[in-house]
Length: 306
Image (cartoon, rainbow, N blue to C red; front, side, top):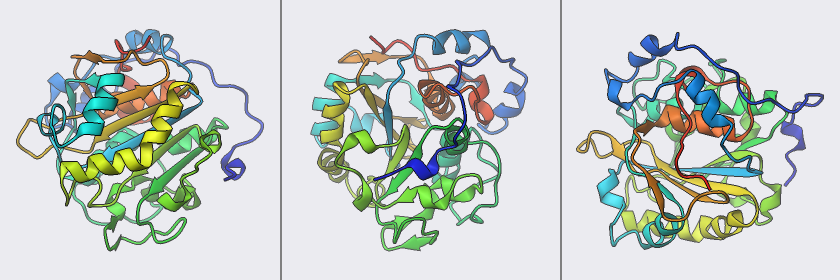
C-alpha cells in the first residue's frame, strides 16, 4: 500500500523538541477533573528525556476498551497479553485514563485535549483544526494512517455500522487529517515495511473488549498483531497497547504495554503516566518538534528502554 499521498514534501528532518514552559499546566488540570497526581512534570525534564528515546521506523498503537489494569494484567483470560507482551515487553503499572466516558479519552490521546467532547455522541466530521498527532506527522513530512475494524470503506464517516463506532476514531473530528487516511482492517499490510511512521489500530466493539470478553480481545490481538509484534523486535519498530478507560471501579487505572525493538523485556515502570504522556512519547519517538495540547507539558515514558 502506498502512503506517498499522505506526505508533505519539501520538509527537512525534524529536530528534537526544545525546552518548553509549564504555562499550559493550570488549564490542562481542568480537563482531568483535579487529577493532579496523574500529571507528570514537563519543561526541561521532558526535553532531556526525549534525547534518550529510540527512533523507530514504525509505531502501531492499539486501543482496547473499558477494562482496569487488574482485569487484564495477570489474568488467565489474557494469555497472549501476559505471556508475550508483558513477559517480552514493558508494562506501565501506573497508567491512567483521564476521564469518562470513552470518546473524550480518545481525543486526549490523539490531540492532547478533549476538544470540548464530553460524551460518546457523534461529532461534526472535520470541524476541528487543532494540532493532533496525525496533523503533526503530516506537517513534518512523516506518514500516518488508522486501521479501523468494521469501517464500511476507506474514509467512511458513518457514526455507527454494526460493531463499528465512530466514537473510537477521533481523527474524523479534525479537518487537518485526511479522512482518506482511515482504512479498514482489511487494508492492514502484510508487508510491514509499508506501514506508516505511526498508525492506530482500533478493533470493533466486540474485539476491543467493550462488548465481549477479555479473552476475545486477547485472541484478536494475537491473531491480528502477533506477527507484527515479532517482526518489530528485529526491525526497529514498536507496538503500544493501551485502553481508553477502566471499568469505572479502579480509579481509571488501565493496562498500557510497550513491545518491540529497544524495549527491555519484562521491564516495568511504576511512574504515573496518562494519555498525555503516551501522546508526548509518540510525538518524540517520531522526532516531531511540536506537541499537541497538554502533551507539551507531559514527560516521555522512561525506564523501559534498553
